[in-house]
Image 1: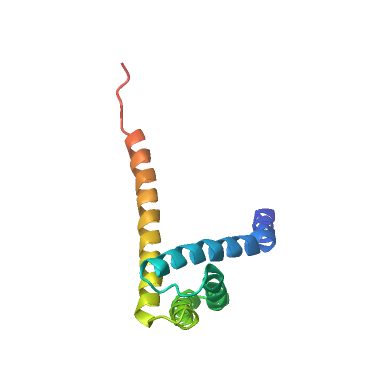
Image 2: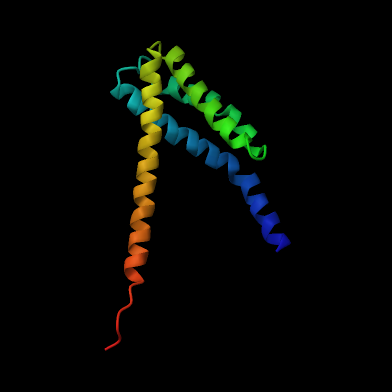
Length: 131
C-alpha cells in the first residue's frame, strides 16, 4: 500500500507540470475564443496565454487544507478577469463574461459527459430475465 502512494506521488511529481501546461493551454484557447466572441480580444492569443499563465499562480495555495482550494480558485478568477481586461485593453465586463461563460460551458459539458456515462451504466445494469 505504501508503494502505491509513493508511485502516485512520483507520477504527479514527474508529470504534474505537463497536466498544468495542458490545462493552461486548453483554458487559454477557450477563454480567448469567448473573448473574441464578446468583442474583447484586442490582442493575440499569446497575450491571453500569458495572462492565464500568470493568473494560475495562486493555485499553489490549493495545498492548504480546507480553505486553500476556495481561495486559490477565487483569486485565479479575479486575476484572469483583471488581467484580460488590462492586457486586451477591453471592458472588464467583457473579460468577466468570457471567463465566466467559458467556465459554465465547461462545467455543463463535463456534467453532460458524466451524465451520459451514468445513464449508459444504469441502462446496462437493468435486470433482464434469462430465457
